[in-house]
Structure formats: C-alpha cells, structure tokens
Length: 490
Image 1 (cartoon, rainbow, N blue to C red):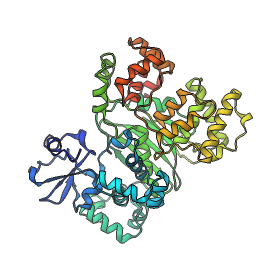
Image 2: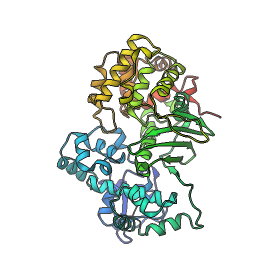
Image 3: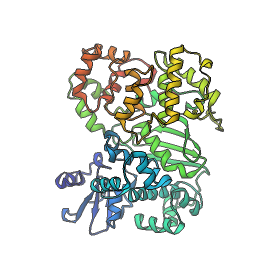
Image 4: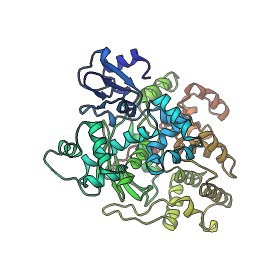
C-alpha cells in the first residue's frame, strides 16, 4: 500500500487508525516516522515519505515518534492472510527465529536460500531479515525497559542484543532517548514494576467482538493448562527458553496482557503467540465489508461486528486436541485432554491460580501407551499417528509451515477427515479461508438462515465469502446457544 501515495495521504490526513501497521509515514523535516493515526497535525505532503515497515523507516534514518509510538502498532494483516514466502518469513521473525537461529535458521525452516529470502523481503518491505529482527528487538527492549525493573544489562540480553553497547545505540537511534530516559519517562515517580511480571497492552484494529473469541477459549479450556479467572483467560505457555503464564483480558481499546516468564528472552515470542491466538492483527473492516455483501449473512455481521477467529499458541497442541474432539462433546474433549496433561505434561507452579501443567509436547506424547486412552480403538490409532508425525517432523504445523503441504500431509494420515483438516487449518495454521462445510453446527446455522445446508451446496455458496470463510464460520456458529459464543461472566 505504501506505493499508493494518494491513498496514504488520505489515510494520514484523516488519521485513519485502520491503516496502522499497513504502512508508516516518515517526515523529512523532523526525522521521525509515525503511524497513520498519529494525533499531531499532519505535515505537508511534500515532506512525507511512506514505508512498508518500521524497519525500512529506521534503515532510512528516521526515529520513532514519541507521541504515537508506531513500533507498537498492530501488525499488518497481510502476514496472517497470505501463505507465500514473505508472509511465512514475517511470522517466523515475529516468533523470534532470527534472534535464536540467525538468518540461516530462518532459511532452513522455509526451505529457501538466505539470498532468496533477503531479496524478497527487501523488495516488499524495504528491509532484510536482520533489519526486521532488529526493529523487533528495539520494541522488545522498550517493553522491558518501561514495564519491568530488571537491570539494563539483563534487558539488553533478554531483548536479543549481543552487547550492551549495541542495545544502547539501537535504543537511542530508534527512540531518540537512552534506555534510562525511556524508563524515567514511563515511570516518572520511580515506582518499580512487579518482579517477574510484565503488564502490557496489546493493540488491535476496531471493532473487536470478544464474545466468541474468549468464550471459545474458556469453554474449551483444558483443565490445568487453561482457565477463566477474575475476568481473564489464563493459560500456560511452552516457549523456546522456558515456560510462562499469560492472563488476557478484553478492554474496549486493547487487550490487557499480564505475562510471567521464566526467561525474559521469550518475551517477543510470547507476545507474538498471544496476538496470533486472539487474531489481533486482523482487519475487521475488510472482513466484515466482504461478508456484508451476502444479504443472508449481513444481519449477523451488523449485529455483532468484529468477530475474530480463536486460534492457538501451539499448533501441535491444537492438532492433538482436534483429534481428541472428533465426534465427541466439548466436555468430553476437555476430559480426554486433561488426562493426557496429567499423565504426560510438565508440572509448573501458579501461586494464586489453578494452572498446574504445560501441555505435553509431541515428543512426550509419542511415549504414551495407546491402550491407556479411554476412547475407541480407531481414534487411538488416529491420535498416535498424528503424534508420531508431529514428533518425527513429517507433519509440520508451525507459523512458517507451507499451508498447502501441511493440509496434504495431515489429510493423508489415517483417521483424519475433512473436518479435522479444516479445523486445524483454521485454528493452528491460521488460514483465514479455512471452511468446515461438514460441521453439524455450521450446517444447522446455515439452514436456519436459508442458506444451503448440504456440504457441497454450502461450499459453492461460500465462494462469495472467500478469502474470509473462517470468519463467516464464526458468525454462523454464533447463532447457536452454546457457551463458546458467550464471554464468561465469572
């Protein structure tokens, strides 16, 4: 979008928050870059330049605006919508792969050469993987400096910097303030943050309807791994350097996020996973605008706009849970998953809460005895087949996975039908066009609205909802009187 100068100018002059994260505005006379909705008086058009990423603006020598904090804008919805190399790379960079494994590690995960990845990222985003990771490190550093009381040296290494000198130079270059000045501005009274706990605000594009989002997560919560407590969805997180506990609460203009991590190096990855789970980078105006074009779906959209697709923080975990949920009730699926967690999950401490375990990894589940599972023999075989494929790497469902290849490999496993493939594509792979025409609840909702109710006819009709069919599913499911559609009240 940054190449469409006229459209960018209109967005900046109208302070349109819908375009935050789509592009960044750099001002030649001040040397700063802003999000389109920056509240300051817009500069003259001839003094504006537009960039596709914060990293590109930083490479051009601009520093972040202290008023609108463009580094904290919602991410571009393109990276969730698209399934090409650039989108897969951006999802992996957000997950911290470059900081942990370098550009060669990123290339190995994507199956391309480092040169090819750098070329495509530069062409589309104006910055290579190192510059994009550097911009993310700067944002992580700011969060650690402003929201914790950890020493600056610890904040530097936790954010992914190789040295304190590089940390200081980068923070000064990006924010025009030293780390000490950033902390002083954030807490002018000198009040220290609670050790080990980070309180963050996760932004999103409005509108956001939290009912089905948090309702689904709470209603399907696995005992010991997830819970709804004191107005927040809480869950444990398995992370590259350790584990964590997150509490997420919906607010009118942001999601309140409280994180407790055993290793602060996991901060950026934990935030990225929470944003993916809550679908916070979605563009509801684009989604709802297209779905409203169907007269039979329009009343549902108008009644409760801004529905998101509840996703997951761990794709492998969700694949296991999807198999456990085949042809059983929500309560039965939670019971089966809870038994696996107690038997194979790692125990953790959650003082003051009810979380007790991490969800077991595929490697841990590969050791389970199928005879110990209280389910039909065919489903036991399906579960062990999925677990073995995940543990061996023949089935890859991570954020950088090729969606088409993952679908094909999943469908080839014994006992995996179209419903499971589409649910995993929707919630684990993040495919916004995933569709479940054989789902009983979806077919019942379609019939109630006068839509075709047979799978084949429903697929044909759903073509007008593409590429947002996963969101259409959420609107149709919401017509049912099921706990997944309601925000918990206690």
